[in-house]
Image 1 (cartoon, rainbow, N blue to C red):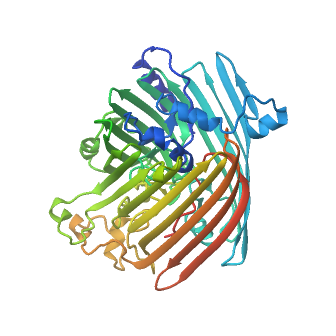
Image 2: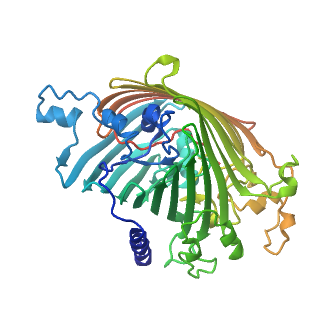
Length: 559
């Protein structure tokens, strides 16, 4: 991180500290990296009608008494304190590799392997993953938490996965691929870091290099954990039934042209606000907005952090308009309602661009860019303890999340900040998860329909492209053309090369050590992508020794 960025984060951290005050002693705060597969195990506590837990802001800081008992039970799964075991047994199955605890501080460290081998039967291809990682974390007092993890990786993937890596130069949700696209073996590093201070029961302050997620579903149309980590400074305040998040991000755009060798890859800034209001024990409403802006103008002149976006107040669209609307504004809504105890319906709406006269016309105006989600999830289905399910539908109109330049688009490192598919898609999915003692079983079925680009034509799926190329003409784009020139009609989900995706995945795992999710895992994957030009089949089986709580998405698509 550059010197001026470090100075900015220090100033923001100090300023946030001024508004906090000494509070009563809290339960020891602990950070839990977000992954859907682990967090769904907390559902019976999170979605109970007996509380107003703010479930949509993730990752969680584990200090809330609503989830602490369940979390503690998960971390101690299979541990029998009445039996004395050897040091080797305890470290393999029950404890962190290094685990120090006293009244003033705690410290832990682990070695994190992720070693798998598989076979893509359809392409007669052997796949494998060789990851050596670590995690280090701990607390100072009850309020300060630190965490870092790092992974060195090499892998051979299935062909569809290779296509994505070669198109984006990114291993999905992780990092830049250092090897050339001609190499079957991919090589990358992945790191995260977090400093978190819970001043009192009202305020948490965090600075880190990691991901964030807003929503109650498997996907998020507002802000997801799909992309690679980014630098951020985040303040979360809880007052009564309201929880409010403000976050400033510093990100990278690998798609934008390099202006100069001194500047390197183009950078971008983002500010995100989210207010979650637990109206009752059953109903919660969330309001979201974001602004993305470039660190430099096209000539390379430094803009840096725009302090007009430094105010921790929701809905900055008027400020962006007062600046001349040079940036990318997005607003959204998140809501959930508990139908019964531990069964909820949830939804999201993301609005990228709005033109009132055509919003309800059904003419497919490209000036109305939005995405939405609706879902149902629950736990203990059929009265079977720890059997959880999720049903979800997601859709985004063509060109949603894209802008005139990728450097202000809703992306980081060539990947979406929201749904992995970008835009111009509809998706329905179902998931089941079941845990019995140390056994974990999970399954996923997905059907998606989207429109791919062909022959250099932009049909609205690839959010890195200038949305003005939608006019689909041979000449260059002229900035002097009136806006109405780009306000084409007839843009509907699935336009372009209409493609269907069928995806099924099943996993069975035996948990060896709950402290860092060390497990033996067997995986089965079926994927079929079909359109008028090609049919791409993948049938894969894999087995491995895995660890960590990271989300590693395999249900992806290319452009």
